[in-house]
Image 1 (cartoon, helix red, strand yellow):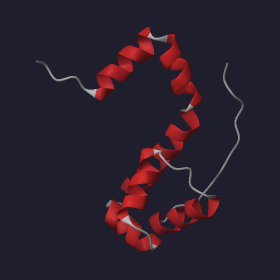
Image 2 (tube, one colour):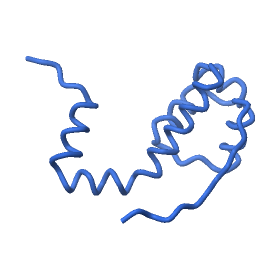
Image 3 (spheres, one colour):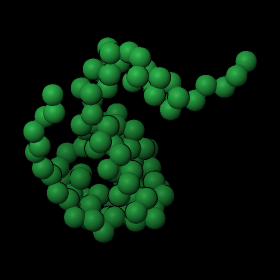
Length: 97
């Protein structure tokens, strides 16, 4: 039995399945926030545990933030920005059709 990678499945479903594309698009904001959190930590060259220590929280909390399973408060995002040496900027953009 051959191994199937999640990225390969995602690409295939995005190409072949309109319902999957629509659901994915509906969650784009959550995905992009989770990616931004992960990128900020990586840019600061911190592990999840190190970031958690700086934010006075747990590694499990950081993992949940990076997975997109939770929606962080603005205060949490401010703490994350401070801990990673970043500046928090929130913007609104028009939706694309």
